[in-house]
Image 1: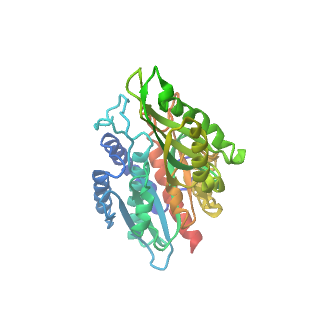
Image 2: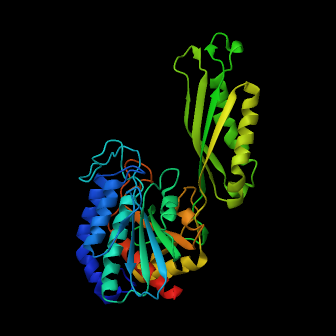
Image 3: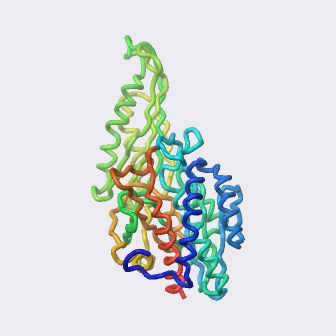
Length: 400
């Protein structure tokens, strides 16, 4: 047990210690059998089996790729939700480990396998408390698909009644920049809003010897990807942190042919909610202004993604107390707002809650999220289980 931490009630620490090898094995199985966003059917089935073995009654989301499971304690108590995301990324795993991904081009490079495993451990321990009649309310476990894509999987969960009767919701996310035993907390925005932008350009192509007879889409595309990001950022206050980055650009197939089609796609991220609201109109105007002199025709697709995750102050108070209880007072760490996006934000549009960053840093140079070599220190799994069990208990007590 971490120094300065408090024991879990009713000898749950002993039960957790017995469960840790199995939880690590589960995490490694999920890691070696990743599934892309929207296709998490085997992962969801595994989750449902494990919860059923703990005596719980999970229910599948309508598509069968996610799970909601209530742990029923005292019927007069509040309902607290804990969320884990279960999808993987379209990357080729490059790690040399026994649990390397067995699926070509797919791997868990964002820690969702860890989130899922931790929540399974939480379910096992809280089910034991419920059986003893010592769970002062209901805890809803949400195993959510499609966090990494648009439309967001959180919206599917909400539509399926995942937030019905919920008074607070909590989640954690792996952070390789924090060591195991530390939890990053922040009141207010902790992530950025994130939208997808795709621009398609068309015009008559032709020979590179006679560009004056064409619309030079390669030139137009170059202007788009170099000029638009800087100009967009000048249309909002500097402290709103707007960042437009193109991750894909395509034009042409031959060195001496000016193409008739070109495209670029990327993400717009912004820290400020007001700037996020105005971003689609700003981007559309700037793109058209930049491209207009080239003569190219513009087709712009702006796909709304997710607002910033804005942590509720009371929910962070719960997480502060839970972290100190689970990992000791030294476990609480301040964390900055990230430019990353997280669809946990959609839950917070309906109920208050908070997202915590769980330290998973390994010895040696840390590898950032969304890299094909990403891995975690698996000691973070029992730490995360203790944290979320304490979070559920603290939240139920505070909401009564």
